[in-house]
Image 1: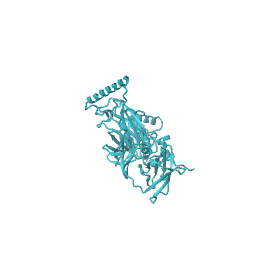
Image 2: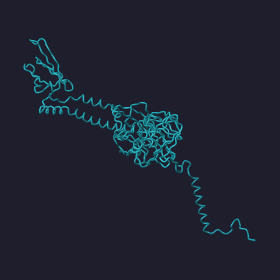
Image 3: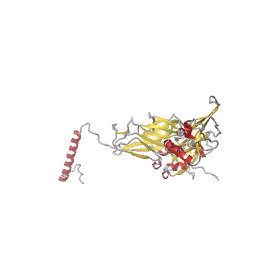
Image 4: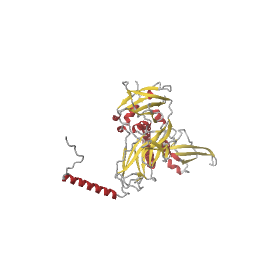
Length: 487
């Protein structure tokens, strides 16, 4: 019978193995002593922190609105940053502090992403839902971040707020300031001043022009000269080589016994004709003619014009500068409104003309970094509420993600839950979403007839485009093609 294997091996342990075991016991003993001696208030052992999920998820990051970056030197002066035609950012000197409130003594990089219409909001991945049935309508939204070159925490001095200025579609004062909690996705109304500014460019130009005397005019119909044959009025010699051109162009004046000339504002002269009866004691007739000084075409007129330009040079230069500045401001303003309204260049000339009465802008004081918005709550209570399915050009059903409605008429973006779609018939609305492969899926709902509140279900024909190959402007062109003109 084969002997059973002993439970414990009674063979001697080799010397080498005994040495290894002894070393291990020594290391364990030393480690235990060190652990016991570790003070209770010692810093905790560093562990990896869990990644914080953000509520801001661009459908395709490569297609999100671009970010503008600016580096401000350590001791910068008051600075205005031109973000785009829509947006400017004013940064006062010494605006940035560290976590202890001490002014930073190093350059600071400011990164600004502006979102000026609902399509850009969709591409940025920023949620606009406030609560059930309400969304925020934006009059200007930005994601502003700051960092120092050394990686220090950057904050804004509460006594030296930054200020955004946005060109605006209207002067509605019901908008207030909001900030997004990017962890929870909740919008919080914040105590940040916002103001509506109305600039009347035309009134400013008219004010400047009114202060400038009119230029010399050339002799026209019914112009006249004056002189003194009596020798009693030597002051009239000043006008010996000058013509007077009546402002109203009508015939004026007569041969008289006395003439008085009075200079008024804006280059107008009143020529007062007085006719006396014999003995000069009684005035028989008088007439006042309001006139411009006029000169014969040629050297007399040229010299008068040169003298006029020398005398009024500063006012004329200020007028010309203001005209150029106002023209640039209008062009910039209309480009900004076109972007906000998602209009093609040159589109809707009648709308652009109506908008050119006064220039409207909004300001927002910035006391914190993050996603900031000038908003007002808007209720979504669309009459059409249906269960939607989507098919591509081959009839294959598509499962869409990030499904939202872009309302071009009311300038809002609102989500669709569980494939339920709310629409307003008669308004320009576009359904936007992404396919599981990351492509852009869209439906121009305003081109579909027959959508009514009586419908419970509808199958939408969807167009698909690769989103990662498109810029935000290209997406706008795709969603809102220019109308074809038939000849």
